Length: 303
Ligand code: NAD
Image 1 (cartoon, rainbow, N blue to C red):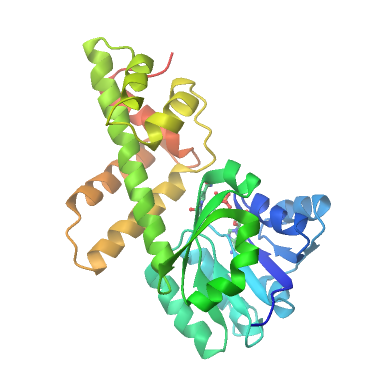
Image 2 (image 1 turned 45 degrees about the horizontal axis):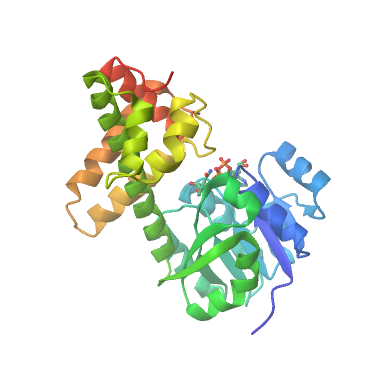
């Protein structure tokens, strides 16, 4: 099994920046690219890594290229390029490896995997869960889909960024599990906001009620980790955007539709998040969604 020495990293956003930073700190030879030149310059100024002019430039010398981009549209654009010569696929060597760690569409991932395979390039999807703080600490959960031998090839690289590394099944399955995980997380978020608003109208202090929930069977990741920190405090600063959450929920619903699973609850959940996004506007944190439910109820959860 050929060792991975030279790593290319595309997408230095809220997650990609700290993830690539951990690879640089671990001593991997790293070449990075982001369409936002300022972000790339900032990364190179603070880490032992080389910057690139284009995805093709990253591809040429890399054994492994990691993408950490907003969605499948961006991944497709970077992999296929605008012409035959300037995408990752055209310039990566046969025998090299592409790992998409973005939260992408499993259906697009499958298509890209087939195309890359025809060029002798292996693909794995390895999206992450845990957010910006865990990306910084290297304690993300990584859910990897593809060939299990490819996962073994990537294990040392993944261990630099993640604490728990799961094999989820064939190519695209990591992306499927990630979108479905976020569906569950999003459903838990708005369910918690709604019950707290009902409690408040009855006269129960939301913070006291949240404490009771956290000692009871209704507790979830939102009541335990997000409500106090982002909603009661009014900081709305988790680092995961509302726009990306709606994208993930759309991925989950599209997948259910493609597989002919009715998923009525998931469809309604996506509709509520999308309605909040169009009412509140773009560029917000996903925890801002609580403000839309507060507006509907004409009540506030925070101080
Ligand atoms: P982000 O928007 O902060 O970063 C995306 C980066 O990609 C930006 O720096 C942008 O300039 C760059 N980019 C966009 N198009 C590009 C292109 N064509 N070529 C090169 N660079 C390009 O997003 P993020 O929060 O870092 O999330 C990245 C992925 O990880 C998303 O799929 C998201 O759903 C997922 N994710 C995010 C979190 C989180 O807490 N933020 C947690 C888990 C998973």
